[in-house]
Image 1 (cartoon, rainbow, N blue to C red):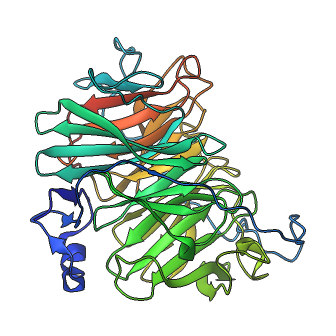
Image 2 (cartoon, rainbow, N blue to C red; image 1 turned 45 degrees about the horizontal axis):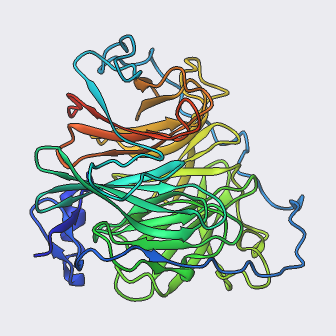
Length: 428
């Protein structure tokens, strides 16, 4: 068995359903077939295709902002399972009682003594992957001009940081992405005609995936039960995409890219439309169908149970897509919320409770909050004094007792990556 396996909080039945695809399955997580750690792949970005398409929004294109989508209304004040946030600790993080923080990496500094590797700037989306001896936290670098990529922090079973290294370099504005069930990280470029790169957490060649489309990518999540990937687009008139591999689920080199269409606003019924040109040689993907629904700045996305949740920053919403019924609704809307404790919606991570998701704020009051299934909000942590930054890369370790995240620009423009430990217990 390979030493790398991806940590997942989804149902065990989901893992059983794809065992026939030839993936090695451990007791609690899918196991990737990775090789040894090699030098990070250095690439040159593809040149953006030329297009004569007007980038303005056609008046015929349906925005997904109809009043027929009624948001969930909270039935009582914010829940308090985590307890009130205490005064900032020695690292400047406000946490509930019983939680602690430590700094594990800072932009421009070496995370591990004796190593030549320096932690990257603008740390963004991240994920945790299990190994035989501990776990690895991957973090994107949202830097321009081919200075982006992905860095790794490796921990042993005691939680000690033992190594740090790059797994992808030479890309641009690697914003968010998504962990795949077979143990790889998809890193997304948030640039026009940007691509998706499949990275090995322990190092080794990264793989460019043009079949997932060339557009301003933000984040991606996988549904292993039905064999789909869902992708957000960070444009003010962006789309939500679905990708279906042509063969094995873990082979993303070929497949069908589709875009969401709202069929009926009152019920939220949706359909998926095939796109003929994912590479956008002649027309940007979001303009290839005039029937595609538009979302105002797609951000984080995750699978929780049989629901896909994704955020749109332009209108301050979290959307819920029911995979079984193929129906869309507004799960959270900060304009209509009585308890305005969640602003600047950005990354989304599944909570340990299957009824919760964690949402990170880009600006706002710099919090990570828990958003429950009945629409209530609870702050989990806050980063005061870094108001020109944003919270990124929220991810749990395999035990669910440590939470990793970054403040992308910190106090002075240098990113800070933190570990929070404490009783992140399952809550019914």
